[in-house]
Length: 235
Image (cartoon, one colour):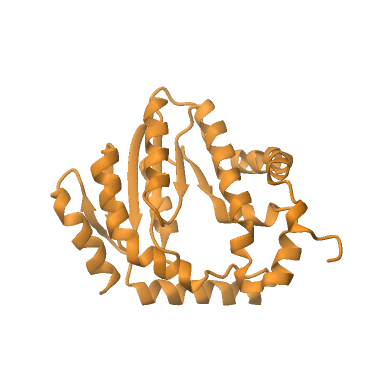
């Protein structure tokens, strides 16, 4: 702990140092090949909403020729991950966020260079990041899709607590979600999704609960999106 100085930390160097290992692991886990017409999917929803269900559904749709990018999986690669966790406990995710975000960008850029189909998991905490990502994908000739996974808010909050407890029992460092972050996502999810739909105009836009599809822009009026998400959150 005496050697831990977050102020002297070089995030760019840490990303470049860990990128080869993470990239190799992703390629080993995902059987992806270059595509003439690649697909990019942004997956959003509050923590604990069951986004793994959405990832699986999209994987099946593309015959699992899909690179899944989940920033939370990169946190343990942070140079000071264990020291941060020991010092900040449940607040540790706040201090690994910059590294995680930059690693997601680095992986995304490499995937685009190879013209792989890709899915990026996020929360839609703001609309600005998804809008920027979708514009970038369109620039590189990708078909763009958005998938929102949501469920009743208390159910998802309890899921984050259950997941952290299970991780602790397995001897892992639990990944806690700060309540203020969770509440912020809940408060803004529907409006951010609406803004992304209206401004980015992706090729596809769907909303799923944990058990079924709730919205598809191909056969549902766009003005029903906000109500669909809020109804499910408050069910």
